[in-house]
Image (cartoon, rainbow, N blue to C red; front, side, top):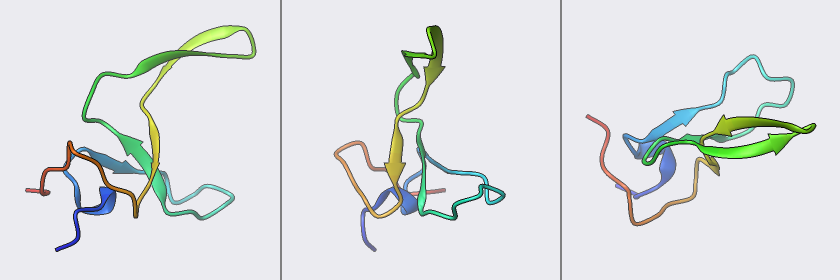
Length: 61
């Protein structure tokens, strides 16, 4: 098994109704980070590609 984001328990794929179908989603291994979008602070989980991987990888259950 490849240790990629798409096979990780922390990965949440992007909604399939997006205008652009892409293999990406959010990583939920850690709490969201506060970022500023149009002068407003919002909290977001990191966006990742489904075929990426990292040291936090854990198998889906």
